[in-house]
Length: 498
Image (tube, rainbow, N blue to C red):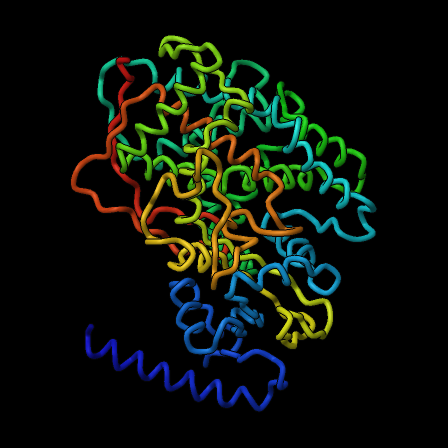
């Protein structure tokens, strides 16, 4: 390495050691080591944002598997040993997730907080509405999404047999998935089968999404250029008078609209902001997740061949011979049988997710980690799990940086046995959060990705263009879910001949 870089790193380590020594005087004996940084309020936010995984692993080696970091004015205690995760996740009374979401989400998406007396009972009813994305409710959603994916594929990409077409893989995945998901969740326009201006809507969404990490960090929106105007434009798309003209709207959105209508204090723009928040929840992480699942399969032709054959076999078992001239409608039951496809998706999530599971301490208390250890926690402190460290642990996953499409398959069924220090892990794959903060739309999201990849592999030959390196992960969204690629990937596709 550059001698100047080494010298700067040594200097930083000396500062850190001195800072840790000074912090000891203000820490209680049972509290974890505190890493504050030299800049008031900001603390270690810049280092964490640059490379969260590397930052946490470095401090784990130095301070052990529990330590506190000052990040943007918050004291965040990281639990780095996945064997300790159950102790955090099962905590309910003293560690709360909803306090954080009810403060940050309204500011981010532009609607008034609903937890409290102003909108009595609304928060609980909104939470219950997410059941409409699970269980038996997935059947009509799956059928609708399948039809919408076929609609977009037919009209935009299945119209030139035999000709190779090229483009950016992220752009391709995101354009198809964005529109198909929008049609499935919010419904079709008053006339026609596709909404006009969908590309413009997606461009504005991407501009907002690029500012999302700053909004979640509670940077005032007026400091973020045109972000407020872009957000207002996006919100206006979902005003009740517009949405009332749409048809085939999902039961989920219908229920939420009914709930909002019951509260006179909610303005139309507030209702629209809630619907916009669901758009982000529906596609903000699903789009990059779809890209990574597709990219990794296309980059390994043998894996792609196995998964494609599995899809054909499942269809054939139900008496369906694939024909590119006809639309395919895979049911939820058929999707559930695609274990190699599900393993491929889980493996791509393992490699690309960098979510952070957080809880806020409701009081000063002693947090029991295991039978032998407790740590002191102060009211207002954030307790954080960072599963990317688990996902990239070589003891748990052999060659953790390598994509293995069958990593989550064992003896013809889903593999769930993964170990750390000789002990079986209860939590080994956590792209969707955990406990009460687990993403309620996770089943719908996995179904969507399965449907997209299935249709892509059935209808198209796919190749990455030569001379490209594996895309790097863009760490600017560290802690928020699936990381985007740092740049798009060029690929070629054509309608399959057989």
